[in-house]
Image 1 (spheres, rainbow, N blue to C red):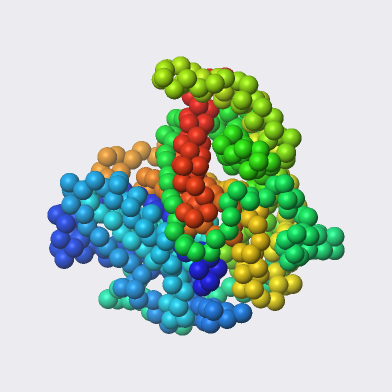
Image 2: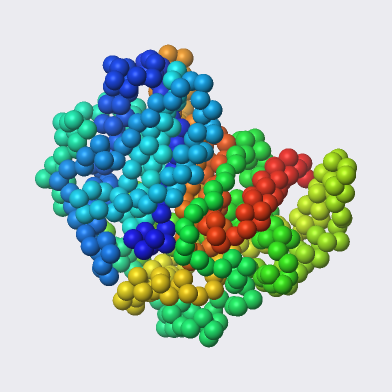
Length: 515
């Protein structure tokens, strides 16, 4: 998709707390203190690159029907890592948002002589944190790979890494590491499919748009037409503090669902209200699912994975699939009827308008929680079914993905919202000690330790994919960040911004509710 201009970039931004002894003095990158910080960070990254083959391969014949990964002899960090120092009086949060929103539209190159990732380091003069924006090409990695990257990097930062292979910002791959690239996904795990599933899915994906029935025409996102150009991403994000987040999680557990299930339900309540019946009768959405836990099951693991001697849950690669959720015409109609009958806004009275909104939310909750539970049940069923009847099992029937993607851009959009949830990043792993021993860490030791303080997950939209993409992520014990992106020419900005504002309002409403 990247080579065809249908997708640009994915990124996870993590904020690391810098140990006091390594905090650079001033903003001069040529200073000794900055050099020490850079060396510590880059040698720790170099170790991650050595540990994960997908971070040190190029892509041969990017524009061909069948491109190939090629192992590299060196990785030159001068091509991949950029350091920026900012003045202490900079409006840093605005600058960070601008950096993310700008870079998300910049294609991550997929050359044959270098891996497909890049990192922007941002440091503010006098600050004790370092923000890293890690970006990647989806042919090589997925969102869970970025999560693994940051957690492995944190471990390395808190270790004394000595790496003779890393000199002058160039990592030389030792011969012992040059043949450890994992084989393709289908040689690692079984993806059994039934004849009925194969026929129905292939017809829906490959058949004429007017005859394909699997996606149910009344659920299609025709309110967001597919346009290949201009490709400009609109990006927004907001945060939810940890106490509010914990209240939300508690409410989700009470109603037998998860944050992902709740976000699916809330998204489609909002769209049901903001779009008319003439624009959308129903909706189809998707949730991205991590394949790694499914690949670990003994019944699906192939010999090649056993011989590789690696833990599937720790592999950096593009190992993901997705499941669909249907929001049928009846449910959408009930949402609209409930919203319309609960109250009417009175713009002239601010307090009254707020009470009106809360009244509407309370009236809609009985429709939200069962729907959220249903979304969670669909995800759990996918996990229980393992790799059976998964889209990955049909890949062998697709002779040319470039042709398939082109065909998709000529059909009506099917999906309204896609959610890809990275879950929790462990930003401060506890020391390995027995449970019955209390580990006391004094202030000096704490100040000498690297930790991750927050995370943001951002992706560019797929031209033919869901109209809106939601990406939640949180560092354990810290705030939740939720980003939303869409293609500028595909959705009216007022609709999308209203969607984001409503979603934040709903999460705060649920997080502050005592019922």
